[in-house]
Each structure stands twice: as C-alpha cells, then as structure tokens.
Image 1 (tube, one colour):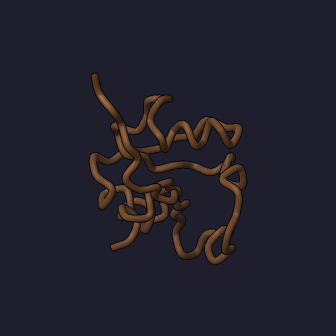
Image 2 (image 1 turned 120 degrees about the vertical axis):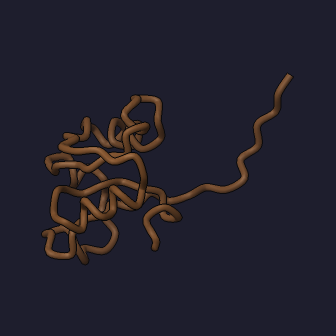
Image 3 (image 1 turned 30 degrees about the vertical axis):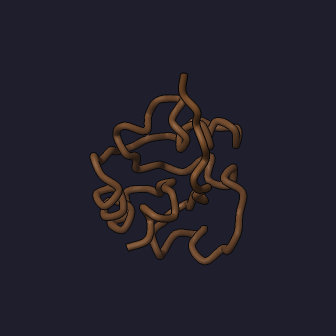
Length: 94
C-alpha cells in the first residue's frame, strides 16, 4: 500500500585532504580511490547503504580506518589527514 517517489538525485563526492594526490583532480571514477583509507559515517557500513553500495559497484570494499557519528565529524577527520570519505554533495558542503 505504499508508493515511493524520487524527490531528488544527489551526487556523491569523494572528499580528500587538500594535500592528497587526488585533490584537484577534477572529475574521476570512484574506483580511483579503491586503495585509499576511508573515514566513514558509522551507519553507512551496511552493504545496502547507498555510500557503501557505490563502492561495491565501483569494484571495491572501502578500507574503513575510523568512524564518526556525523558528516561534520567525518569531514574533520578527513581534514586532519586520517583518510578520505564519500558523502552526498549536500553533506560535504559546509
């Protein structure tokens, strides 16, 4: 008895520290980050979650080195150089 309608389609962004080799690379395929360490939002570790599923579709499982409970926390950890992350554009823009 339910109907689901897509309201918007949000692009995913790979967020890396400013000094990272992929910084400023412009558009790239997610598979380019397959060997990177990832900082991850805790609730996105399920294979069905869109962020994790995007990595699986790109041919890899993210190597998660640390977690945070919020997108802001993940961004702070990435800025500190602990890894990169994958976030929807709205969550990645401050």
